[in-house]
Length: 215
Image (tube, rainbow, N blue to C red; front, side, top):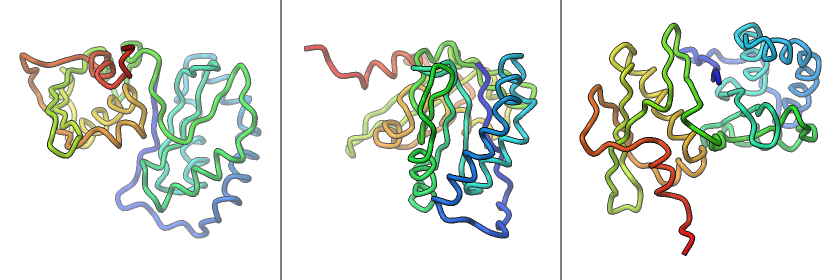
């Protein structure tokens, strides 16, 4: 499964007009319905990059600091995810977007934060020419006195990536395992490592540590 997210320019350009959340949500869904045949065709052909530019523009029209992903759905074939990354300034836009979303069907479901994926081992992240299967992610965890867990993230391909891309993959992997909102609440400091540690665990093992006990 291919993930893609809007590449945020540094610094982000100031929009000429930033609509209020309700206006932005209505405009988004109108354009979404117009683009849907092209989006469905690209996904059906296994070529989501054909509509990546249009999706980037569409999401940026809601708010320039939003991120998005199209991934496999849990209840439908595909899930469209818009994320504020828990930014309180941007969160009203994802709230309005979700409130105005169409009813889910067999093809599409919609999320205003990154949900956990059913099986992280089936997810591959594409960064430029590099493919990073999340099955190869390894984590070292350290509980803290604050009740959160510090995490060191390793992937064999990290050596070929820049620091920003490594961190992007690390947070995406944690979101995929736990869901964005759970991860934001339980994960403390995140560090990167170019080497695997002897006590490292996989993403599924990390997820199981936060699942409720059956006892």
